[in-house]
Length: 309
Image (cartoon, rainbow, N blue to C red; front, side):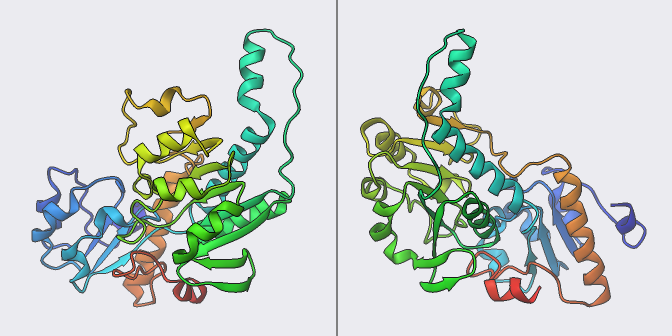
């Protein structure tokens, strides 16, 4: 932030002091992207022209006051794409090669031969066709998997997914997938999209991976699908309540892999997030087009904007 401090008055604040810090501010960098304090302090944003959030998801700041204002909203898309794709490939291999069981047997000093699954040729449905979804698709294709996507509109011959199905047709294509990866943005349309009906449509033994938002999933329905079928396993990095409560049955399910919202957090990610903001700040001061401008009604950066950037 030193370069920015040389050109502007920078106020650092916590949630308690946010309203006072917002008063008179022209730009707002939401570094704590999990904070829910912005709506409550919005009344003090009397001069604000631009808000940048240090995450790809914008749901913590996508409230009516911001949506109806003239404030430009940008996010940090692009920072986490590769890391999250590596995470998804890692959990796919963990399931297929039974690494968790191998580790358990190693600690017990047991030599127990098993056969493992191939991932080559297995079908993956990536729900969410933004940059993170595309990075996941490219990595899984490189590993020999067959990948298709689910987005707002259907299309063929996509460079990363091949076939993209409309989200309205999700239930029709869920039975085809060995792995379903959720990476869609959280909007009113996607909230709770993975419910009992969606899980019931999946292939017996299919694995579910959520690296999007916890609220995409109805957790009680997921628990039921893992306990009673048809799901064969789940890798979960995000949850509707974080930290995941200690009493959650997900903690003790043998077919569940849990990580604490860290699939995109590589060594150095915090500095990279500041660098993205600093680059946009330079553009903002120079009157140049900003990168990653979010459509405040859609809740994400439109693909057309991404291609232009």
